[in-house]
Amino acid sequence: MSCNEYRNRKTLIVGEVNSGKTERTLKILRQLMGCEGGPIAVLDLAPERIQGVGGKMPLSLAEKEKVLYFSPLILPPRLTGKTAGEILALAWENCQRIEETLRALREKTFWALVINDVSLYLQGGEAGALMAFVKGVSTLVMNGYSGRYFAESAFSRREREQMEALMLRCDQVFHLPPVPPPFP
Image 1 (cartoon, rainbow, N blue to C red):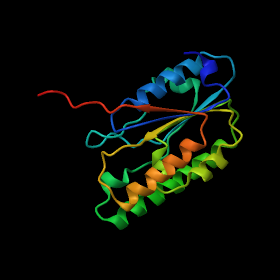
Image 2 (cartoon, rainbow, N blue to C red):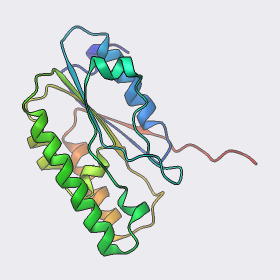
Image 3 (spheres, one colour):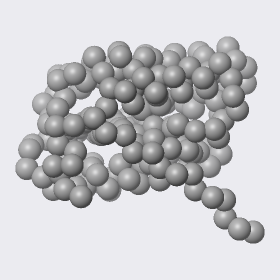
């Protein structure tokens, strides 16, 4: 794979929990860092790892110094909310913090944007609004959850609908297969 596979394209990597979405995105980011083009922005929306789910993009300190790194406080709604109302409130708060960060990104100059765990935005926001925020970005690489790990609910259906809407707005979508559980 080369930079040209991602340059001037909107790329989305989707899959189940723990299917390797972040690792694949990190690999692409490292390829982009080796390309000519100037600064790259990273928007890490993943919550801290909890109950075996989530986790920030594992960038080294040297890598973080080479990119414009943004990571707003994100709480995983389904894993921390106790009721449907709490889950929705957490998703809305996350969405507000993410939109503040997206507005701050507009003030920066970069040629590529990498978003880790875009599904956290889509839980409270809309795919169209996200694309409006990043409309001037020519190279966009994102990953997000799309699967059946979490129980079916109105919240999960809304997230899935927004992820499907985002897929339609991307030039290329990679679906990662689920990782089978380890044998005992």
